[in-house]
Image (cartoon, rainbow, N blue to C red; front, side, top):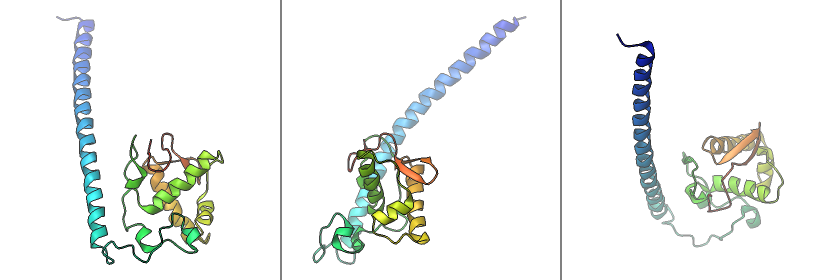
Length: 178
């Protein structure tokens, strides 16, 4: 009859082998996931390009000013700069560029990046609305809050205090993503 210690060692060895096997499988799945995410990003870019070509104005920007800050144009951003309905926010990861996000999300990141660069601390959604030249009415503020919360959930922003948003650790300036 085997000893209790011997049986425990057998079970421990079996558990260790199972953990090692699961870790190897997890590493394989992570590598496969990384490849699938890159492929997905390529399809997202392709879809955006097709959307631009098939847009009602056929992708033409004639007659529109190329202005980075909509407030400088004296009005809201051009329709071509608005977020597409149901635009998706990918989970942030090292090296992911801001360009994968819609313009509205990029504007939020840019505002918070500027604040971070100037060491001015986090912003509330009401402050963001004012910065963007929007009326600080509940509907506009809540729309920004929804976007900010989505960015927090996907790892682009951090909310260390309720309602106060800042860039997440590792998210850098425009385009870089790292």
